Amino acid sequence: MTGPALDVIELMLTARVYTEDTDRDPGDLPPSYRRAFWRTATAADSDTDSSESGSGDASEDGGHRERAPGNIQRPLTVTGTRISEATGIAHPWEAVSELLFTQREEFTGELSFSDAEMAEQWYLKRTDADRLMTNPTLAGYFEPDVEDVDYEAARSMNRPIHADRVWIDSLLEQVFEEEDEEMLDLVEVRAPQEMEMTLDDLVLTPDQEAEIQKIVKAIEHREYLAEIGLHEIGKLLLVGPPGTGKTSVARALAHGLELPFVEVKLSMITSQYLGETAKNVDKAFEVAKRLAPCIFFMDEFDFVAKTRSSDEHAAIKRAVNTLLKSIDEISLIRDDVLLIGATNHPDQLDAAAWRRFDEIVNFPKPDSPMRADILRVITRKMDIESFDPEELASKTEGLTGSDLRLVLREAVLNALTEERTTLTQDDLLTAVEGFEERDNLKNMDMINGDADALIAGSGATDGGHDHDHDHSSGD
Image 1 (cartoon, helix red, strand yellow):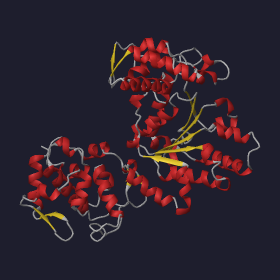
Image 2 (cartoon, rainbow, N blue to C red):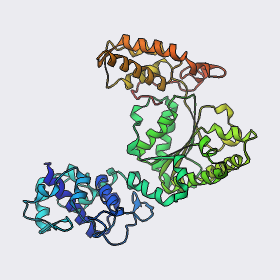
Image 3 (cartoon, rainbow, N blue to C red):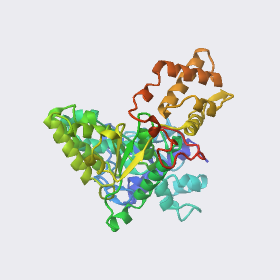
Image 4 (tube, helix red, strand yellow):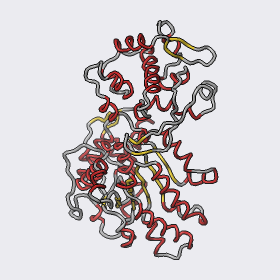
């Protein structure tokens, strides 16, 4: 059963159980509840600060890693504002005002139970195991009473606290002082749920899939790797031409593993403020460690090699040396930070840069079967008459996944100018011709040396492409 009254009573019960059971931590609250109580716990609005007291919870990363004090404080005071934010119900009190066991304090707007036992019985008659499994706090409380309810399973399925935007923002406030605000322009931090790309949206070569699987297993078995002393693991370098999916893979991993995503562009972090370059590098790594477990993505890694071999400003060179030292010192096993570098120009990296990474993942331009796979996935939600992805793939040699998305975008926009939402194969072929005319395949022109070495399935890479999957490409 669902409905406004059930949603309101569930939140009120959750707040009551969480307040009384001090073994519960923010990881036991559904994300929407955490957001409502977290934000109001730190805001100076009238219905919260006066009613909340007590020390902050020592929240943990999935129950394993000690964290800084959280901003969800006991007791959890339930007001109409909080209920609305957590559930989307505009008038919570109206939904439950006729129930015999609810009451509202007029001055503060606080909702509570006049008879908690009656509230529990009312809720148990209307809930079920599936609903309880989305709420670890109540799953633990009602586990003995409801069949097929398992607290540990509910906890493991709940989005971890470190993946919440409110947790990320709270930690960033602790890391950055007011004078460090410029740094926020150089470091981009995203919560995993903010990632638009998922692993299911990617077309990958077998080698790429294998490397991703290894990383996933390393993260799952961090404690074992630490026990056997294998600390130098979890540093990936993604190499390949622009538009082949390097950034998309890193972001999709963050989404799939529910990890915060910290991204820096090295050319910016080492040139924006010459006098602060080394400090900026240190700060970027500090952010990653404070947000751990997380993915730390360094784009434009070839900038390191170019700087080391040039006559750049001494401050930048010091920053690059600081960067290389910081890479040496950070670890997936010790720090819970998965480090991923990306470069469009692997030929410019020197030995000192290469040896910082334990895995190198090649991102070639897609071959014809890969392009067909990419087209199938990025057109999944489109209505296309006589769609033939193999024909389009044969006419798009040298285009990347990013290029193919631009082709599809052009075809859609052209159709919309004719008031059509159904496309045809001719629309797509015309868009391919237009792309070639506008860009003259400039991405191919920029490749130095043998272009075939950068095409998947050309024989220059080992493994080619497995065509039995329907994942999609990144850009």
